[in-house]
Length: 112
Length: 116
Image 1 (cartoon, each protein chain N blue to C red):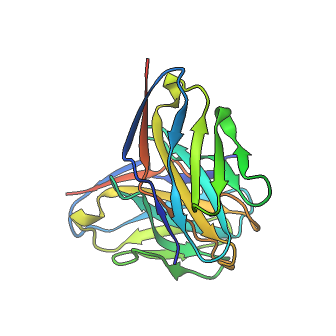
Image 2: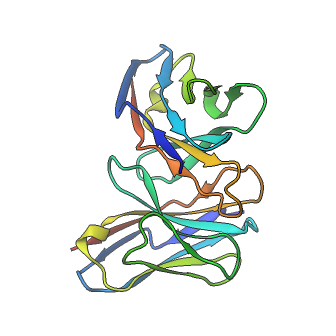
């Protein structure tokens, strides 16, 4: 049981480049989330998917798109990266009920 | 809307002493409350949660937290701190009626340093 996995672990982009962050969970969870973590700001929700086939905006969605490919996978895409998107990105998932979220190890992204 | 405040960016405590990391929240109705810990260059690990029942919740690694409804607080505590407890701690809240979204709102985090 791998839990929540994320690829890549590290990435450096130039301004204007695009990339996709991958996330997968093997716990049969319905809901999945993408967060960004910046110093002193905690975790802020970018997008979430309450179930397969649905996605919704979170607190900071601008500059990002997501795809819930199937129940296991939830990807985050940066179409035209900007230095303000330099951050650590975490994927999480949750089972139904009053459960805690399970987090992946994170992707550290630097945009030059 | 829901919100979480962690009033201390940094908490220092000597090894063997008790520690407290503070958290207050604002939410409509009764909350679900969580504590997570983050070690350097790692993801968030779940420590404990309050759902209902006993106001004192026990979690992993000897941590506990006390839910105080009147003060809207959920402070994290440990009777005897270890150097290995040094990490970044996050408090999070979720409304019970958040439906299928089950969104968490996180505090800004408290860096705990346990001094040998």
